[in-house]
Structure formats: structure tokens, C-alpha cells
Image (cartoon, rainbow, N blue to C red; front, side, top):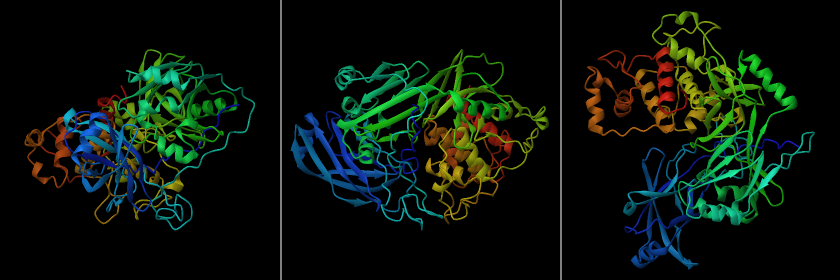
Length: 555
């Protein structure tokens, strides 16, 4: 029996709160969040609790704890007060006074964070998702969680039933005990487990480690490896979805070669892409399983890229890359990856079927062009059955043609390997047709915080993107991919002084300065930025390639 791929876990309901605790300076970081909910009506509720000397210090102050709520860009939204409510098992509990978060978009990812100045801003984090309305959807006119028309387009999965037994043999399962896990994580932030094709891990053995930052499971199977940060496991949400507590939950990982009819379908997709497979297709599947057999796929981790490896069985001669196979559409999609010998290391905020593909692309109209090598490198890496950088015909690229805002949003989504929502889940801007090819990419880019739209609420997808907009979005993509940018405002201002038209920048001065300082762009020429001019296809492709190389997403 092959384990079925379940529905996505809160793919586009990722609305998380950044909550920074402002309390007396504390000696230890023994502080945790409990039962934090971001209700459908925009109200945040929950508890923060302390133990050890931290709890004693906070309680002795006799004062409520003040929480500050920020959005994902670090902008302050509102304070939330938590007052002392109970003491038990050495812990002091403070309950939030219910507080509505004002004027906050449903889709922007933010995170719950406790900061301790005494430990140089050591943090305790927890993801909190805004919950779907149980009635008519968040803002659409239809019924159900996902809404319809031009509504918010969020959707929440339901627990999936066990799959119907098929003809394939169950993989042999390695079972880990809770006590063994607790002992392994005692005094260690990373635990390595070896298994064959499948492993079952009790959540009860992970809860203590999940309360600490930076903890990870390193899982090595016969067909691939999986580096799982425990921070991506939202236990309160999983428990609610499966209607059970941690004691009844198991984490199930299978890493198996794809065989039979499905392997034939993957081979057909490879042939359709004019590529060569350099590895077997391998399925990575992560499930939360309740004691009564209900299953929930954990296949979208927001902005956290989970690292995996698979082994190649053929030597590369051209431009190899890892790709994802999408069974629903029989398409191959690009995945950020690097190849070292026979090992392909890749990272995505989700799970699926992966393989290594080699495919070379040449455009006749790029012969001798300054961006020829970069464009053809990207064009050899697939996404959604199309090149990351699409040619206008089979052998032409038109490098000097302008690129629209929709096209550049799609380029960033593809290049970052983001999860694209189903067409039924889109809906954000009134001028973006949900049926248009670019709607899912614009929604994914908005959900990742890469784009915002204009003050009037529109996105203007068919308008050519200008250079200032392109550089600002490029900087956001670089940061989303984990890129560092440790510059002061003075350093960025100094960087811009070399350009005689820097004063023409309207709103993205800091982003433009950072992109130039990072070497992602050198301006329109040596001394001009030309921020209001339309960017062209060659410039967009090259800046994406530089982002991917600098963040280690490609070689």
C-alpha cells in the first residue's frame, strides 16, 4: 500500500503574529506561549507562562506583562496585555486580555516571538495561524473555508481518511519511542535518526525539544535525507485539526522511490520537458497521524526551507537541477538545489516527489548578449511546465522587452520554489482575474510578503515594472530566501551617492541601496539608476540569478 499524498496543511492561512514580550529584564529565557489563537474575527487570545527564576522575577514584580504585536515587516501594530491567572507545576501563567489586531491583512506571514534583552535578544518563537471562519468563508461570497470570487482565498484542510489499500507493498516502518527521543534531545539540539523507508516518531517525545529554539531532527533513510526543524511543527494547530492531544499523535515520514505507473508518468513528464533524469524519482511525505488513524499532511512550512538530499545514478554533463513532480498536472517544477558529486541537496518549504533533471536551453537571439549565460542557465531550470525564464518562442527570448509586474511576480515565485496555491484559493486584488495565468503566482507572492500592491488596493498586473519596483522586490526576495544584509542607513545612503539620479528614487531608497551594496545590481549604468524606467527581461533574469547564487539556492 502506497501512502496517499494528503491535503496541504494551512498553505495559505499563514497569518502569524510577531509578539515581543516587554517585561522586567529577566535572568533566563524560560518563557513559553500556550494556546495562542488568532481568531477569524481578528482577535488574539492565549497565554504566556514562565518558570524557574524567570517566573519568580515576573511574578514578584506584581505587574501585568505587556506584549507588542508587529507585522512581518517589523511594523508595530498594537499592544496586548497579559495578566497573572494561575500557578501550577512550577509555572506562572499570564492570560492575554482579548485584543483585536487592527487593519491587518489576512495573508501576510508574521511570527510570535518572545525577546529577552538580558540574553542579547534570545528569542522563543511560535507560529500562530489566523483561523478560518466556520461560516461563509473569510470574505468571499460562497460557502466553506476558502471563500469564492475575489475574497481572501484562504483555505484550511480537513483531516484525510486512511488511503484505500492498493497493490504496492507497505514500506518497513522504524518506530521510535518517546523515552528514547527525550533522552536523545536531553542536552542536544540536534538528533540524528537512521531508518529504511519509513519512520514513526511520537510527538510526546518531541514536545520538550519543541519548546526550545533551534532544535532539529536529522533523518537519514535509504533513499534520501531530511533535515526537519522542529519549529515548523505547529502542535496546537495539528492537535485541533485532528482533534487530539500530543499524547495521541505520531509524526510519520516516508522517503520512497516512485515505482510502477506513477514512475512512468514522471518519465513522460521528463520527456515532455526535453530533459534527462539523473536520479530515480523519490517521494517525501510527512504526516501527522492520530491514534484513531486520521492523517494530516504536513507539506507547507511557510517561509522555512527544509533541506533534503537524494542520490544521482547518472553523471551530469550539462546543467542539472532538482525538480518537483506535480501529479495533478503531470508537470515538473524548479526546486532550489546544488549538486555535489552524486548528491543533490535541495530545499523547499514543502513535500512532494523530487528527482534530478538535466536540460539545456539555448536562445538564438541571445548570441553575444551580455546576459546570455545567466538567462540560459535559468531557462534550463523548469517550473510548472515552463522555464523559470520563458522564451517568447521556442528559440527566442527578446531580452530587451519590458517585463510586466505579473511576470516578475511569477519569476520570483518560481525562482524561490514557493508553493503555488490551487486556483480556487486565489483572490487578493480586484484587478487580478482569478482565471488569469498569473493569479496563482501573484497570490503566492503576496502571501510570502514579496508584493503589496498600490494604495488604491490594485496590483496592475499588466503594467511594465519599473526599475525601482524591481529592485525593491528583488531585495524582499533575497531576504525571504535567508539572505543577510547588515548595513546601516548611513552605509546605504553612501552607496547611493555614486548615482547622479539617486534623488529620483521615490520610496525604495534603502532597498535600492542594499541591492547595490550586495552586488545584485549595479544600476542602469555606472552612474545612473534610472528608477522610473521600465526594467527589461534580461535585467530581471540576471538579478534573479544573482539572488539564487548568493543565497545558495543554485550554483
